[in-house]
Length: 428
Ligand code: NAD
Image (tube, rainbow, N blue to C red):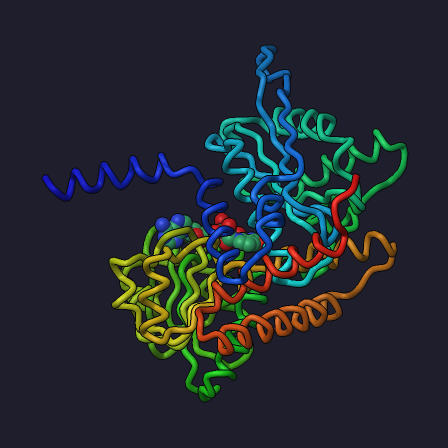
């Protein structure tokens, strides 16, 4: 009974916690750590601009449905706004605000010449036809056309949006502008001036940061074991590069469960099995385990690369990995963070570990502006350098101040944005 009550209360609390309030609280605590000028804190607490548009869309049955779309531009002191667009039934203005602020920190920690923004439409794309999605996307682009531009705000995909949706945004924007403007969105299809290397970018970055952590801890390369939670885009490519670099992939999972083989798993063969059967489970060359067991395996590197809040105060004490590279957004709760830090586990925070995607978006945008394109090898080598540099910077601050890597990343990000605001001043 008590547990049930606790569960219901917990669920209620989650619904009641306003994501934007959480983002502001987080900013305020970083501000205290760096003694941030209170005037700059006031500026950063609020997004610079919020666009709300009600979007009438003709549905396939002839009816008109009015959707609500948002674009929140948090800060552009360091460069044009950058951030994805999410299509989901739970999208709210406060969620988009929180995500926009979070993008400001992410681009800053990666030292990309961007600010932060986020967009969203409250809709259920799983219940909409391709034609309805196209009309909704074009209507949304029309509504925000004056506020996006290759030098103003550059959207990208997020939950339930993809390269097709980016292609429609690019086409609508270009048609309205009367010229071809590929640099107005990123993560476009290759055929429409997208970038080589975008598909593998996030998982590659996750493993590059893990590799740098392995070096810092002085671990023997031939004894590295890796477990990945999830086997979608991020986790598959993290597993692929782990294997390529001679680490042993020992476990993987998806929503149906996980698999484990201490002798090693070939990631490409496992992907083939998942494609054929719909899941990684029942892979003949491994034994089935649960997702909970996977997280608690004794491995060198754990990649939570599926969903949020999987490492909590309930299981943090049982985590045996030496390094956690956060492929997913928000897989570790603040309470778990504290436990992991006390246990000496090196957690590479999401805003650094999974920033390979936005960094490759930056490289795509640069190529669009130059109208000159790099090979996959060139893109991945530029991405690798940026991931290594950002890791070094965050690691150094975490050691100097004896704090966890997440706090170090936020300190770097907020300080960089604050400095840019201070240098630019307020005008008019
Ligand atoms: P995806 O849809 O390709 O893969 C998600 C995987 O997670 C699937 O294998 C799915 O089966 C698995 N999964 C779902 N529920 C699960 C559960 N309860 N337990 C275990 N596994 C479960 O998604 P993705 O693009 O790989 O993104 C994964 C995470 O990484 C998300 O949090 C996303 O926001 C974050 N992220 C992705 C990118 C990117 O470029 N794709 C960039 C930054 C962050």
